[in-house]
Amino acid sequence: MNIVWITSEAYPYAKTGGLADVASALPKAQSKKGHKVSVIMPYFPQVMKELTQKTEVVQGPLSVPFGFTEEKAALRKHEINDNLTFYFIEYNVFYDRPSLYDYNGVAFGDNAARFIFFSRAAMQTILALDINPDIIHTNDWMSALCNVYLKTPLYWNYKNFQGCRSVLTIHNIGYQGIFDKSNLFLTGLGWEYFNQSCLEYHDQLNFLKAGILTADMVNTVSPTYATEILSPEYGFTLDPPLHHVEYRQKLRGILNGIDTDDWNPQKDKLIPANFSPEDKSGKKKCKEALQREFSLQTKPDIPLIGLVSRLATQKGIDVLTSALERIFFEEQNIQVAILGTGDPELEGRLSYLNGQFPDNFSVFLGYNNKLAHLIEAGSDFFIMPSRYEPCGLNQMYSMRYGTIPIVRATGGLDDTVINYNPDKIDESTGFKFYELNVDAVVNTIRWAVYTYHNEKEDFKQMIHNGMTADFSWEKTASEYEQMYKDAFN
Ligand code: ADP
Ligand code: GLC
Image (cartoon, rainbow, N blue to C red; front, top):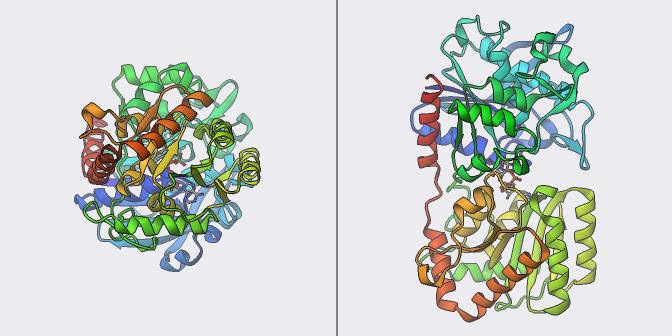
């Protein structure tokens, strides 16, 4: 198939979260299976840094109708192999910024314009390069307008789109791209699209909703999340349109995989020592390095819990902070190392905890890929107390690195972690709790730490189970193939 991915981020060029990992690993897996894949994303020179040098300018300006004018952008590309090319929309007014979506946690005021422009420019790129896609694959609200565009006279008449269907992947329904309706004129669409079946949402624009209702297929990134978002609790008010899509059998839940080249403890160059399921001795060195890096005492036998996360309400960091405070008041024999950035209030709470319990707790506020790998490799446990988690990648990275996940049983966390059960020890991979409250987090951490100290054989077996589990993209890529085929029915 000829597949065009449209995404606002992709690793290693620009990344704020798991979307970037998926938008890099899945196209790669698809290209390996023989599909022709193009990935279109914005060109973020300040974020991409030296990676900008890998890109080359594609001849000729790219015309992008935008509001009442026609803007000129540039197009760059980075060819990975014959079947996989990344294309970048260069338009510095919108994308030459220090970060992708916000400045110090506050969304850029012109995000509506920035991503309307991006969506339109992506459609223009397909025309300019004369690509004939079978599938346009969009991701989250930032590119969901493309699903709409494909169904409008602005694009459907072009021969390039004659045999084309569109698929929208929802990585996170908590972010929908809701903007004032005055932005409609920038899209080039008329008021006839400002209705309940398309862009209108409480008298505002909602890009994700419009994408959901116009895509030929919609999926989320785990089977459990696909069910959860049909409820008011998890649907963030989009459960009614999702029910409509589900009723028409257009909704899927496909579990993400992980890039087993980037996240491989046997070959990882970002960690101080490599290790494997057969020889785990390198993991001890990683733990020591992690303790040193985070200014924690370098003791080998103290259980160390790690976390790498966007600091957002979604991730349950508020509850975790309270739970850790309670644990540290009573217990000195646990260490916790956190790497994250995001909500200034959560950053403040974590820094405060760091000040209160410097011997047990250490936080690094910022984005740092090398430290993320070190935490995965050096920790004994990895905690994810998410309020909701469409898939979550870190719990899978953890298991691969012999680090036991402690997770709230929601979304992809529930689908990927198998709760500890001494009677089913050959399957067990982690510790789960169900309600999100301080008691549940405290008790589950205690249960995990008790097991670490007192059930050593079970603990070893769980590490082994996680390290040898298959989280590769191969299976996932086939499920996406099937969904693409179903988009034609
Ligand atoms: P989400 O996409 O909701 O943020 P995921 O678990 O799917 O959650 O993916 C998060 C990805 O972002 C992981 O690859 C994780 O290692 C990475 N990440 C998150 N925060 C940081 C950070 N502060 N520094 C480095 N990597 C981070
Ligand atoms: C989102 C979700 C996360 C998921 C990622 C990749 O950011 O929050 O759970 O793993 O997208 O699909």
